[in-house]
Length: 341
Image 1 (cartoon, rainbow, N blue to C red):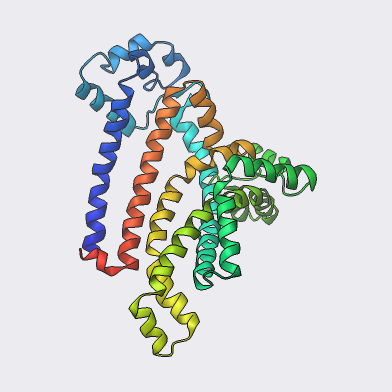
Image 2: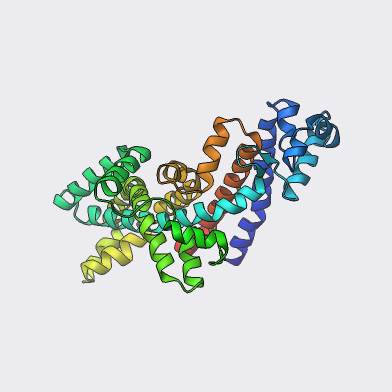
């Protein structure tokens, strides 16, 4: 198992290098002036693009340009964002905890709800529970995220005056801005606990209800469908029939023997879902007024803020690579045969 994990870890730098080459190759479609913006560290530097072109060899060959750009990336220089009026790395550092907090709270309810629905649908195949779950999944899967988000906002916030939007109450955000409350992690639900202020954590959790519910309804449908299909195959296998013939309780057969083997395809889906969740939360952040990466990246893309777009592309590539690595390792843990192949 250790050899399997080490082998996967050694592949990670190669994957990241390939991603960087692909992104830099796409950058070659930009003009030298547009590429030069990705090297600027301040608004003043961004006005002297001719100097940057000469300084960073942007009029040289591909390999010379790539090595120069890669060195800047590794030093944390991703350029200056005209959308946020600060370096790209600074913006990512500020906004990433916000998006990461939202993604974490959306991931686990989505996964658990999808697995539970898929299990119930497979166990009660062609009965009322199965039909109800399948109808719910079809409705959820067919709904665009932004449409459901707007409905949730109109009904629960606009009509019933529940939950609220943003990250927390205004008075709490003022306390963070003044430094009365210390932002240890940038995640308000955790910072509230670390500051000994449960009212801060509860206020943040209340505002996460609608975004989390929106994403869970939409994304859990895919997990449900995959698990239901996989579990139906497993329930008809010989070893499950043998377990039943030995007199094991039906609950043990379903949950311990069948679901554990059926869940492997779900791991793949869950890994990719988490990897692309940062992208998926963009609409949710905009609609629910959450100042994460989405609120910055979408306007930046519309305004052709190339350093911001390239910074988001690099971050997404890094997150997807790490998520795939985690999925590979989980495969080995869930099914030890994979680690010996």
